[in-house]
Image 1 (cartoon, rainbow, N blue to C red):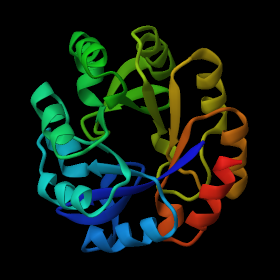
Image 2 (image 1 turned 30 degrees about the vertical axis):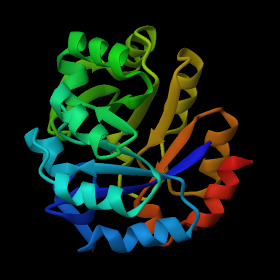
Image 3 (image 1 turned 90 degrees about the vertical axis):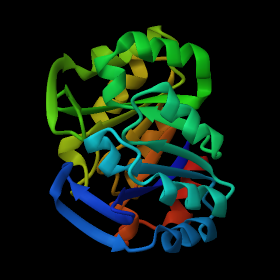
Length: 238
């Protein structure tokens, strides 16, 4: 398993939200390159970046900031937030992003998603964000009446390479992640599964690793000093 430290961008700054609430945010860094240096020094090979403005508005608001991040590192960078057409996918891949993440577009246009999966293969991931197992879209502001686990199974049958799954109720609260849902997802899908949302404790890293989850996104727990990034990177590899 690998660890993906997270940079969530709003107005070019590194922030963390609580349960996806744009009005409940904490700003950690005015310049994302500051925390990028820390991630690199800690031994990170991966980086998860979200354009929160893009996720809400469907535009690549923080594109230039993300481009600066890409230019400064040689990490495997995945980017999500506002990627709702092929032009945006190409735009990110052209600047060196390794994996682009579909969210709202994947849920609302399954034909488009299928086409992008077939065309871009491992360069496409789908982010499934859920509240009470129902799928949330448009920056988590709208809930669809569709079971999130069943939708993951559908994506798996289409040949998706990677699914990033977030339980919104756990996100940003430093109270732990939803281990049960990842166990269920691993049992029901053959694709890569990345855990996101509330990963806070070292024992969760071990449990996710042992249940064969492929990756874990960690954000606030690192920023708040709850977990040592260098240590959990090594733990995940064991």
